Image (cartoon, rainbow, N blue to C red; front, side):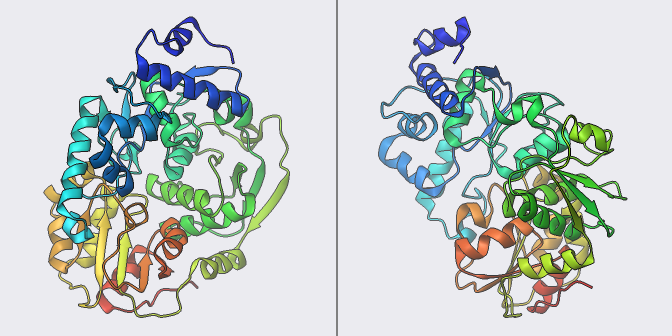
Length: 424
């Protein structure tokens, strides 16, 4: 792999042991991928403090040891300096305010806070959300990034027009210390054109329908690049967020185009560039109903737990949930967790939304979600969620039954203790 003089200097240890380890990792990684060179990045979003096992490891080994091992693939412990480029922490495993509700022991919660102080001192911004683009990390079109988190990556590539592959803990750790990432995959312009044409035969408008469409497309195209034709409504951030998360969950979609909406597809022709569609797939009422039925893993309509906010809720979603719950009480046999980034939670709190949700019996959580934390209320058997991604993963992760539906369906289930959702 071709390296610049500065990259060679980092690899040779002239900029410290940590950066040498990082460059060694990136060179090995890039060569395995067939990358000819590295590309500069000024935007890293990774998981430096995400899992309970890694936090427990800190108690035994120390912060530098854990970063060296988990984020640099290094058996040797090196002293970790300040990050070389702007870097943010994605979603974590513990809500610093609601750790007791999660069932986390006090010692583990304190270790996470210590870990966050360690990371902050090294220039890692503790956004602690799967949606960094909702709280200030908004790369521009064409910007090379190094991001983890499948739902964030597909939003970054498609909606923002920035460039990233789905990276891992190791590659983002190395990128943060060097400002480099292998130049391959979706960093290359020739790899960003569409492959499959999706023709919509029905209206796709509300958030639930965008989630269903994404779930259908993920199965249909797997890891390819779908191009949507026939979207008659301008989708919002919320709808595209849920669409992308669903497509990245049922399949491995990292990028899509909607002509006239996404920045690299002014027209259908621009979306495909020099390519032709390898397949045309139609999505109509039949496919919508079949997808809805496919995503449901529950048979028991008595629900125990409602989870809203995967990907993390926007302020508009927080307002909607509060509006639907105002003056009402959650069923005594049901628990409701509403997840939003901490920065948005502050706005929701000032706006009175958190008080309304709490008065109804719900809990507003930040920093985490049940799929990442692997923590649900004790005894949960049946969940309901507005997230196709969570409906896909949580039943397998937590061995529960799952219902998927609209925000209204989920709030009504929380109040009634029973799932009554469905599609026409």
